Amino acid sequence: MDLIYWIIIFSLLGGVLSVIAASTFLLLPEHFRLGMLPHFVSFAIGALLGAAFLALLPHSMETPQTDFHHIGLTVLLGILGFFLLEKMVLWRHCHSDHCEAHAPHDAFDKGKERSTIALILFGDGLHNFVDGILIAAAFMTDIHLGVVTSIAVATHEIPQEVGDFAILLHSGLSRTKSFVMNVASSLTTVFGALLAYMSLSGFSNVIPYVLAVAASSFIYIAMADLLPGLHKKTQLSETIKQIALIVMGVVVIYVAHSSLH
Image (cartoon, rainbow, N blue to C red):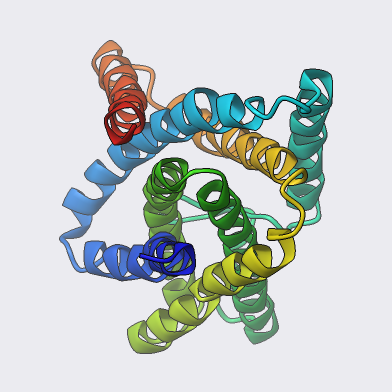
């Protein structure tokens, strides 16, 4: 199968299929959904960190002419860049039914509701667009790396889309409109992937640095957005579950990366 088809299929996996999975998840009873969502988040942390440190960064350093110090600097600048984007509320991650930073404070303030909806869709579209670029760069390095990267993207996209759906519903949109808008914003994953494929084809020397940015994205999401939420539950039993699921996420990425090779 041609590389472009791999890229399209797995960028759809990271985008549209994650929206469908999230919308299906929201149909489950609320008590079950609220109980399961933190487990998805814990697993996503492990998958993201595993993909960053066990797959993306090693591959970014495989090219003989790659400067390791430049790769390290790229990761650092990437983390700072994503921090600034989130400060500007352009890069957002909500992984619960309530997101204090993006939900309208007054349910009867239609202006706030509209701005919240626009903000969610724009931020999600930008995020998905970047994910598409990262997936394409991974596939252009190695098909197996592309598969692993897509898996990591999907693991954190599902709980994020659950949060997006919940906020859109709380903002007054119907379930159908929320679904259609989320699918539309998720298609930017494919656009980003196709743009990256066309742009990077003649610049293979740039791809290691794109992989480094992908690693910084995964590290930032895992440590700055997902991990703090786990500290809300301090019971020993919850901590053990969280650690077990994080380790499971790492193991899944390790096994997938190793077996595919």
